Length: 294
Ligand SMILES: CCCCCCC/C=C/C(=O)SCCNC(=O)CCNC(=O)[C@H](O)C(C)(C)COP(=O)(O)OP(=O)(O)OC[C@H]1O[C@@H](n2cnc3c(N)ncnc32)[C@H](O)[C@@H]1OP(=O)(O)O
Image 1 (tube, rainbow, N blue to C red):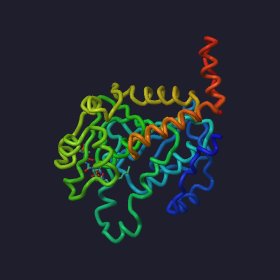
Image 2: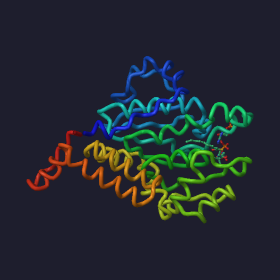
Image 3: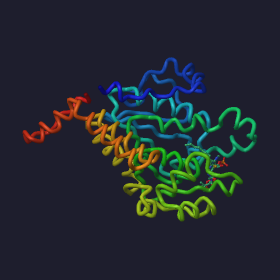
Image 4: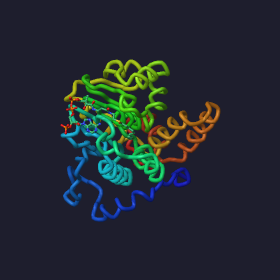
């Protein structure tokens, strides 16, 4: 029943070199799995049923370069494929979640290269991850950094976080959701002001008031709080968690009537799961539900 609802993860040809580079790579099971080949731009660990990825390019404020995305895509896919992981947290440093795409790496690119290579096409694979992903944002989340956070399902922020789309000041425009997801998160006027000036940023509190961020914490708490929420989600019924993620994401893509039909079908399907029997049975028997993700 559930197999029929599963959509295969798209495999992009551009990740093939990456697959070769990571042929010895086995999914992280515990803090920094010993078999993991050295990652240059990331740190990974697991905490309970949560996969934690830390962007780690401190000298460049976690500027997003191609090598970083090669590693990120692989690590995320491994967490997504690992049945012992139920949710993922992505974070950066206290100074920067990510200060945008790497301007120095990008500056000499030309149109033909961008078009031929479908530049950025492989940088958005995060949106294909089926498990919930929480961004734990401290410091700068600018340009591609803000867009990366917006590709996640939930954003928690430290109270010094800054969200912005400064691309216009570089003579470009946002290329991975800044003109699309941001509008849906903060409304047209604020998104226009941010993208058109490149100088109007949102503080964490403003981002929370606008709905871009769901909770604000002190900087040292944000990762732990994100992991706590991720662990809570990871221990709920995984097929149902994924259905909810699918259904909410559909609300961005399709008209309301179609979205409601999609939701109703998933609701019907939920009753084919053992977890539905367990969840409702546990309520009736006044005990804690023990979900088996079936
Ligand atoms: C998820 C998919 C992503 C798709 C991306 C789609 C297209 C996206 C385009 C962009 O994101 S364009 C970049 C947008 N971001 C910016 O314009 C911010 C640039 N950075 C700054 O304005 C400042 O660094 C700062 C964030 C305001 C911090 O200033 P501060 O004075 O505190 O530090 P710096 O000395 O400037 O920086 C330290 C160090 O880091 C390097 N660096 C910072 N940001 C970038 C970057 N985006 N690209 C490359 N390098 C960056 C900076 O050059 C410094 O390095 P050194 O000069 O010391 O070697």
